[in-house]
Image (cartoon, rainbow, N blue to C red; front, side):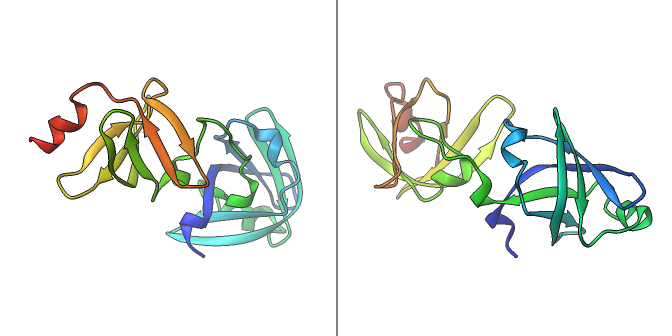
Amino acid sequence: MKKEDYFYIGKVTRRTGTKGEIAIELDCDHPNAYIKVDQLVLGLFEKLIPFTVEKIKIQGDAAIAKLKEISTPEEASMYHQADVYLDLKWLPKLTGTEFYFHEIIGFDAIDSTTGFIGKIIKVHELPMYGVAEVINKGPEIMVPLHADFIAGIDRENKTMTFNLPEGFVALYENG
């Protein structure tokens, strides 16, 4: 199992009930989109462990899950504070200029004025918005993934077009 095949949705906060149920604090935009998941992956000690979902109940930004492989409160306690992941197939499809950070890795970055500026090799998550690390022949360029700068996304051709301020790219190229 590779971590990049999954996305983070929350953390196990406690055990609950008498049959090994776990409480999960959800960190996602649309919790009810995950009411029919059939598998959760728990991250513990740098390992990803898949579990079959018997039942899941969403309550606002929390969930109570009964997993087939956990049958006692003591077993459930072993996963306290484990990160919870889902397969990427559960992510809702986005359109227009909405995107997931992992989705744009490998896209060509194009400035509407200067043209091709490089390939997006990484996205750094910051509190307000992400920053794409773009690399070409010269030094990497750190492009803010702010709505004001994003002109468009072409998923089919794997390109992301930006309206960057005049001279932005030159700042990086000229050091």
